[in-house]
Image (cartoon, rainbow, N blue to C red; front, side):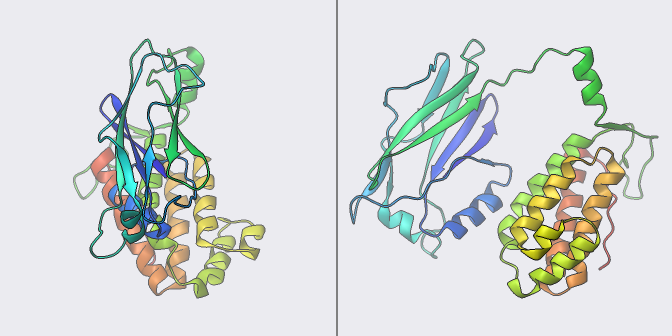
Length: 287
């Protein structure tokens, strides 16, 4: 699996592998909650006691002019024993290879860099896919489009002393924080007891958060996907808050571990928006 993180002017790309996929996903979502997951692939080791190795000297099919790709360790090898044992008490960290990627201002706009993986039973190549961090010039149309997702409200101060959506609130930034926190809870949410999934599906359907097809074939993964898809279309801050409140209250209504999950997610949403955006997120839950 590849995942991406920003570090100043460069991107950090991490290649990692594990036999216990759920443990790996849980680690990434907890320790690297802001990371963007890239491509993943299933593989088998070529040798019983071997290793897999990323090769950075392969001929490239597409231009890479102006891009600098530097692994933090050479050779970049992940040994089978480490891959198999991650998740146990003695192996708290997954084996990984960290790669710095930097594009100069005059680089080709998009990087599609091939890295073959050796030591696997069949041929596999990963591709690092990055784009230059250049903002398009502002035009009347882009300014108009951007302003449609910015909420202007009267200035006020909440009881906690923080600005409650005052002056200007960028709704897109709010939605990004909400998504980032939700991703960090993904592994815990998808591990909730399956017996109550159908009950939760009915609660969500009643509040129009999922469609009938999802209710008929429910899963926590589908509920999260539907929530995130619906969040995209919320244009004003009160709509975003209502969307989140309905989602949380559906979990609360199921009770038990589902209610505890909602309380934790609610607290983390409130704290993250307060810390990152500086105002109080007005979402109350029925706990």
